[in-house]
Image (cartoon, rainbow, N blue to C red; front, side, top):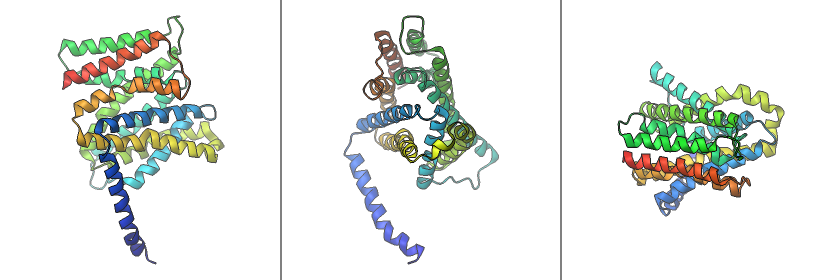
Length: 301
């Protein structure tokens, strides 16, 4: 049987699978898709954190990005033909920021409860959202979020935060802001998801040396590879697909408000999946960040 006939025979199945997937997603309201995407990301982070007992954070990042790149390449191959050097430079910068953002976040995750790490990381996109605004109210949202982070700082009142973890989470937030800017620029230059798949290849190249050096032969363990595949699916492929479908059916402002719930969802995942019990002042700090993010999103709308 030829390759052409194999392709022709499998095409109806792929079409049926695609229609079934679209029918299933259409049955879920867009707000539900966003919440599922958030839950998927945070459960993926919890799964990754469980791997830290066997691998270093950099090795887990390598598994997540490397496997995610392979999966994404089967869905969208990068189209670089006809791109200028500037286009490629933007996409490469996007990939570097993506890799370093994940590396910084996982280093923070190794030192902080997941809810605290996500709350601090949220300062990056929140600050980016209001940095160009001249409204005093927008500045107040940043101050409220900063107050939340001050509550999280280890001033001696106890809790799960430490300065190294806070530093890595803040760096991840800054890189997240850069990621957002470069993601938009890459999307304007590359068709479809090809820019993201190109960036994932770049991220894999950036992370490979440190990931392989720290993970070594353990990266080839079948169990670890299986869990790593789960992390890649839950943290990248599944939420990306759900968010795209949600954005197709809802206003961006509503999407942004729902995404603001991510630190709270992360704290709940940490509690029920990882057994990370936060203190009252830590819940209050996460509440400050969530309220600031919702307020900034509503103000922009």
